[in-house]
Length: 166
Ligand SMILES: Cc1cc2nc3c(=O)[nH]c(=O)nc-3n(C[C@H](O)[C@H](O)[C@H](O)COP(=O)(O)O)c2cc1C
Image 1: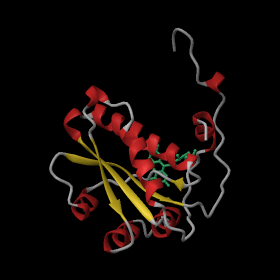
Image 2: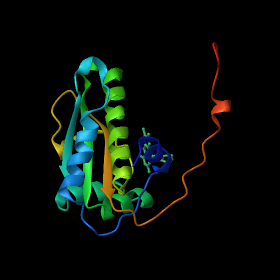
Image 3: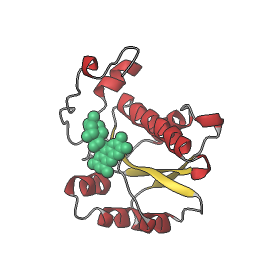
Image 4: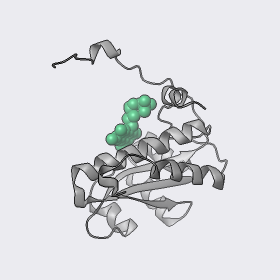
């Protein structure tokens, strides 16, 4: 799939079929993440791969009260937690989100679905054993879509574009 087509097509998917993710798709998604632009080429990202099991069940229970997110975590065959070394502060997070977007676009281009979820606080860091100085950017369930939502409408560029001055 062409890049602009994937950008247009990508939308957040929060429900997946029970079909597993092929290993080569997983490899391509992770590779796409690592090719993102990043400040000083410090590659601040680290990936934690989670499949069925206790850790995934814990993530699901953390989103017990948010049904669409719970559904996404529960039904996804694979969850990737993207964390980052925070020594560069804002630039580390910006870099890591470029990585996340590459992963989401790669998933779309492979016919897969995903959604980037936000988790704050120490509970998830403890669960995943994050070392000191690392933060979580995104928790991303991946799988084959079991829903095909309309992409939320964006404002036209003309409402967002300022030429020369805000
Ligand atoms: C930084 C960031 C954090 C997000 N956190 C969540 C989240 O915690 N839960 C969720 O369901 N979606 C989350 N999303 C997905 C947005 O809700 C979604 O991208 C937005 O509604 C636009 O819809 P689309 O992705 O289908 O275009 C997040 C997206 C971004 C970029």
